[in-house]
Image (cartoon, rainbow, N blue to C red; front, side, top):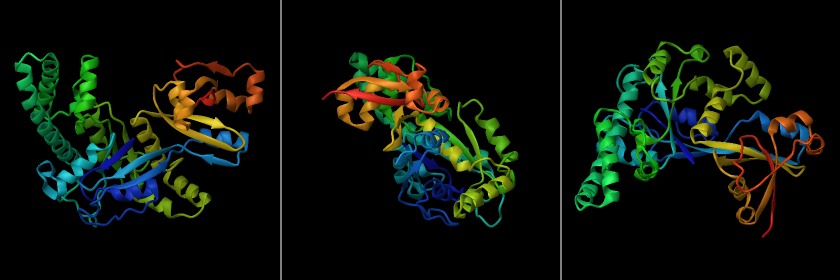
Length: 364
């Protein structure tokens, strides 16, 4: 599961990617500095794993990770191939969610491709290009489906009804995600279409250092614009995050954060938000050899979660021993949790909850 960072050129995408991944993607003050997408495997900050480490004192700790992709800047006309547009749009299509970076700071030294700072116009530029690409996809599909629907093919008729609704939304400059599937068939079709504007989106307002805590008038404009989109808006000073990344010690970073009025780096907030956007969650295994966070999809059952460790665990699943993280933290050890009667035994139907500490019994 990957989240792709998109936006116009020079809004801070590659610098943000560097902060998230420490992969040092090339970033410079000119458009199309990034051409090939950079992919970073990013640790998901989670205070729960720190607490488990304190209690269990394992030999090693492994955090959950999420894949972040730095995609080159889109420009007007990208849907028609402008500025390497087709390649970039293809890269976005391969992602499962979109992190849309908007420039919300003034700085005469950093050029803006449209001459001045206007996050509302910038958002609409990107939205329109993505919508136009989706419209092209929908119309191509409709050509085939219309022919089949005329012959009385029931499946094609169902598909045509949904495609017509999506096309109408796109023509009104609305994204595909605004079209609600009416039943299970439409839900499955929506996934099959792989439309770019149906992907969940998170907006990142890149502000100056002074606005890192409270935001500014640009951020207010963005919040007002997206209030009906069911999308989260995160305020982040990418320049400040880059400075924090350069500091060697934890203490230096904490002093810098305190000076800004922040309790943690904005990049940590963003990584957790991206993880949630991808509908991912974490369960833990905790033993003296290793404390580890495992990534699963929200709604996964216990056998599915076991399969993330090894396919044999899923095939031969017998049961799961489950402790809620809060109980493990409160009682301090597995033995004390058992004494308190807080360890549960769950079967194949159990839907794993975020933060469960689990141990699997299986037989192959």
